[in-house]
Length: 452
Image (cartoon, rainbow, N blue to C red):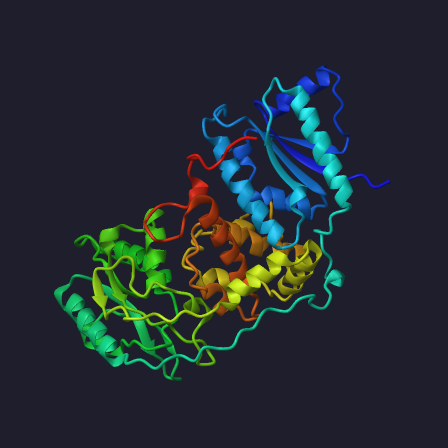
């Protein structure tokens, strides 16, 4: 008879003692449960849960103190916010939601501990063995293809006036010494639009604005600010000057996330916001992210270039259609779909490099002291990287889709980010970057969670 392997992360101060209480009272708990004693349920990171499933667990149970009784004051608040978000992500990629459970057990609740562990073990037993630990041989033909909607031709707009206004503002800022560099766009020798870094007023004519200004230039701000500061300190001159950056409305929301995370001081960046009618993809059609975008003016700027269009045409989004299609699929179909996607990953890290919010100096999955030393190119490892990265962007991703555009294997990364964005908005009423506040995942509960 099949017996599931259950990994239970137990809070040292309450749940682990609750397990002892159950034992002293001779209350039966299933032998399937392998208990891992942790200081606090808030220390059970998503990476630990992913690793448990990767190593062959059929179910993961996290038990902590009741809300308001945490030995570390708000440690269990972190668990109450993070684990449900992770559960949404894992469910979206094919794990049955019943395989991950968060609950609360105090030191005196031995009976409750026994009941929860028995209920959870029985629920996992009925599901059967987990298919999470995947082998490349499991990857079959896609059970459901991505939804493809009719392309929306990009409507021609007059960008010359905006380009001239950007050049004029850049020249003014550089000549006055208000900024040390202007980060904008230029047309390269092969006719492609690319990022440009202009430090001389005589070079502002390089700057342009056109429908191919797709890159999110906020990626470069932190480095430019820190480099400028280091050079000034080395030469013992005046304090470092700000830098200027050209942003679209979606890019401006990235700035709000960065400011909330103290990536750089607000007075070190002059924001040149540009009214946007959308940008086009490689085929000349409107990009998917622009089809449903109602925000045509940046939410934050120092200088505004252009005006909002009088009317905004919105179109069905293939991203939202695909999220809905996957939500309606069975767990097995979702698993099969995502395994096929992750199997194509070559671990080039282009997604991480292009994302302005993947800012860790050393990635968690490559640190020498992490659990993921030796993380290679196996299917499970690639899936863990993408899911871990998507989780780290929960409540932070603004939907600029630079990760997906940079991916050479055309993996639909935006589906993961969009699903978590939907969850953050539904649960917390939070849309990343509208105002400079941190992601709700890192803050304490404010009425979102109710026990029972």
